[in-house]
Image 1 (cartoon, rainbow, N blue to C red):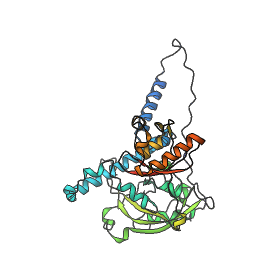
Image 2 (image 1 turned 90 degrees about the vertical axis):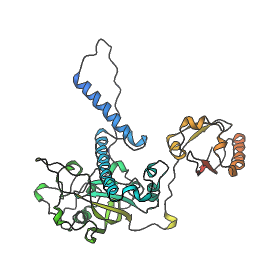
Image 3 (image 1 turned 90 degrees about the horizontal axis):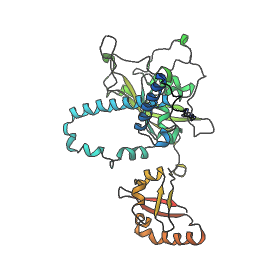
Image 4 (image 1 turned 45 degrees about the vertical axis):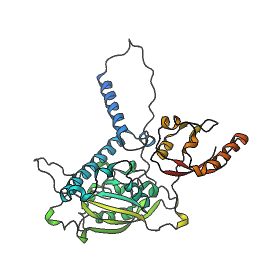
Length: 365
């Protein structure tokens, strides 16, 4: 019988603020091998942090352990896609007439658009209960950033009463091995033992990968930082068990381990919001201008929305060349009003992105 007490996931610890120490005089500095080693290690960690595919505000709050954890998770996902794409290229050489290289260009964002249109988020969990992948949209539903959950135990997110249900769904026969009560806890994997208790199966025991026996459809309550009432959100998980390619491990005798399974699901809220309750995604950014509306600066979010660097934005001259022709007179009227009264009021107009597309914005100056 599983215990009803447990530790739930919370916001991950932030990177500690390092105090600056006074540099001693040159004649006092002594050779310290331990300090040199720490400096080299910190330098490599800083370089590794800069390679993570996250915005600067997210990378700056990550501590050293989080950087290593996310890096390992990223490499595992990369290994999976490398093995999967290699398998696909063998089955479908040439991409079926499609230009596969063109899909990797920055302008091809079909995956991002699909995630935004999806009423939920994508979650991949290993048979041991570790989050193999979570789409960035998990933050819109649970409040956790993608970096908070990747390569962590999924059971830290699940309500204690639903952990056994989720654990059964991870087993191909819905009959996982019972946990040992002497180990303490509720028998669920924690983030601290993520490399232990690897679950593998004999391929002869498994049904075909396209078998309906591997399909999953169930409901579990997940920890939600956006819910002030119960702190949990009921989610419907729909997907199937699939092989995690590229994750084989070498044993002591040099042989590779048997294939591992993972639960590939789409998690959607059980109680879908009405049209009036759907939360629109708003991004605030700031720009600085001269009185003639010439741009002089833009923050990091503005660079993401518009696609320009600060130099590209400021070297183009007047800011009116970024405004849609149909909105110029309307913006000019509010510009004159701002010069006379000191406030422009709320102005809605279209801005030109670097990709050549127009984006609607609301501005107040």
